[in-house]
Image (cartoon, rainbow, N blue to C red; front, side):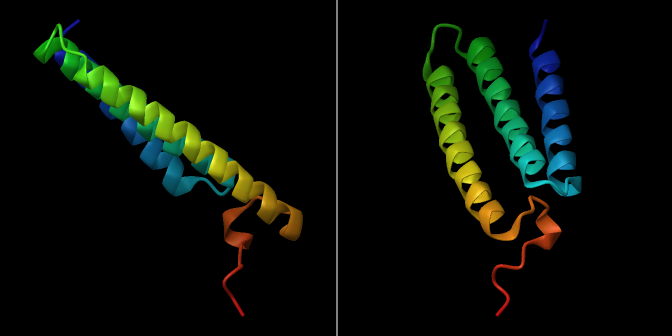
Amino acid sequence: MSLGHYLLLGAGLFLIGIFGTLTRRNIIGILMSIELLFNAANINLAAFNHFLHPGGVVGMTVALFIITVAAAEVVVGLALVLAIYRNSETVYVEEYNLLKG
C-alpha cells in the first residue's frame, strides 16, 4: 500500500466526520463524528511518519497526543451532555436553548 491509499482513507474518514457533524441532531452522534475527524488526522500523521521518516517517532508521538486530547474531549463533552440532559430531558441539539433569557 502506498501513501496515497492511506491519505485516501484519511480523507474518507474526515469527510464522513464532517458530514456527521453537520447533519446529526443528537449530541452523542456529533461527538462521535468529531472523534472520526481526530482519527482521520491520526491516520494521516502515522502514514506521513511511516513514509517520510521510517525510523522517526515524531508522527506517532503527535498521534498519541491527539488520542489523549480526544479522550479528554469525550470526557468533558459527555459530562456536559449529562448535565444538560438532567435539566432539559433531551439530547437533541435544536432543543438546547440555554443561553436564551
